[in-house]
Image (tube, rainbow, N blue to C red; front, side, top):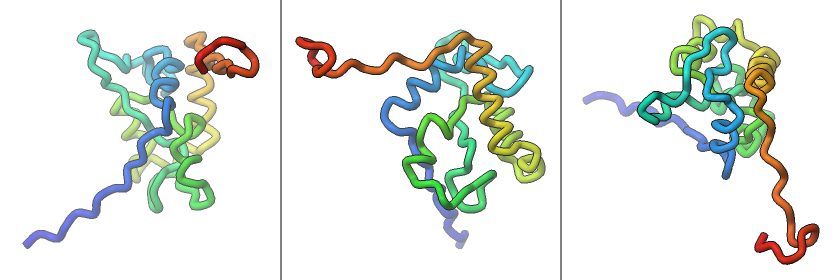
Length: 132
């Protein structure tokens, strides 16, 4: 009988975080000079959400001080193609990619794509008569 594989504790991004990541990606892998498209010609989402600070103990760049919500927040996530996602997390190469380096990659991609964060949603206190 085979031993049971331990199920990974996959943490889905918070609320609208996935949408924000895709909007700000410019449809390109955040890894410098990769340029791989994250949405295929057929409309398939082929990019992968990667953690900058690893979500699980033993994962690349894990920090046990971060809360579950901090690990799932947009600031800790970036979009990469499958090859680059493997590259930054693989046990043989993860030491090359620090938290700071990955944050810089993410910021550079956002800047190069001309992406801007979504506007703040108005509140009824500031915009009378709106449903939100």
